[in-house]
Length: 188
Image (spheres, rainbow, N blue to C red):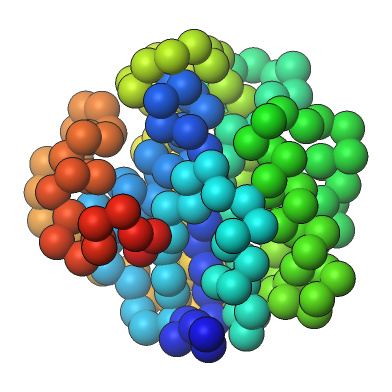
């Protein structure tokens, strides 16, 4: 399968474990708040791992958004790029990061790894069962979206803000259950 875009924004995480789902929440918010020029694909990778390999080939840029526990202040956003991204998983492995680690290793082995790799890692405050983000992680959502948009703008992507009131918490339920373009049970 040959993708139709050069840039893949991949949100990773488990939305049933509070801050563990921040990557998925971010990509849902990007789709809810903005339209991007052609060449950008936004994907909810959920807890999938190696299954995502087929979506990486023929891309120039991969931007991953995920929870990344590293002992920092909850809500801290860390931007990592290039070879430093796979290196993170040599020392910090959670159950879902095993899948991401396998995905990146397989992409390197098969030549499917995009030449430009960036990860936005968000320090979680809470990994208990629940669908709401913790206050510290929810509080950085706006600045995280802005950082991702700045990353895309630097790559020449045109971003069109959509009309609407986006104050308050990210609307996880609305973002994932009122989508017209998501096939039932499918990755979009």
